Image (cartoon, rainbow, N blue to C red; front, side):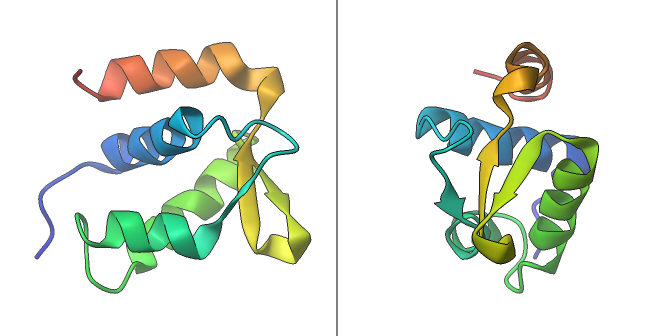
Length: 91
């Protein structure tokens, strides 16, 4: 049921969704909401999406809030985030 999206495209989509909602630093979004939005497009169980969110947190792109329940974009890496989104998402 996977649509054939690469991991980089999924990561860019995660960052783009947070960017569109203006979720920088102190403003955050629940991880479950992100997984539900993307799991419809990627895979019904959402395990791949959760794994990629964890990778983005380890890379310092996303910041964890509320004991791991929510995430936001790291404002210190805003330029890197926008370049990554433009490189992997076709607008």
